[in-house]
Amino acid sequence: MEFLETITFMGSDALIPINRIKYINFSCSDGYRIKITSDDGDWEECFGNDMDKANARYKMIKKIIKAG
View 1 (cartoon, rainbow, N blue to C red):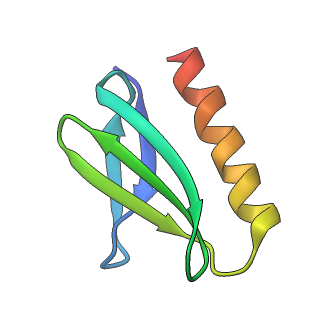
View 2: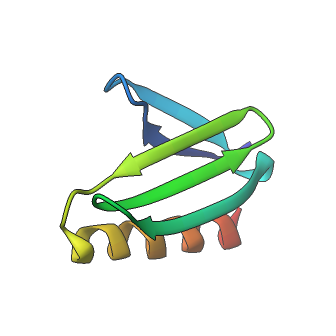
View 3: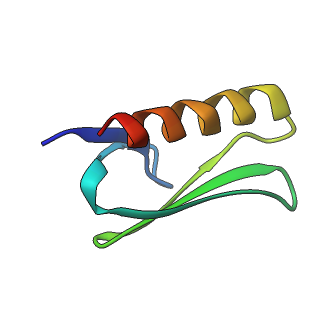
């Protein structure tokens, strides 16, 4: 089984099984965010105003999911 590593809101690492990911949303409200929704819960990665870093991470996640 393959996993996507992400960071929780408390700053610790979380491993999300790739085959259980349902949705990935890229948004901007008070900063750029990627929300990952899976069968096991929701995770949100925050990037502040760094659009380049957020976009690179979003593309990376999409590539990992397609490979998984």
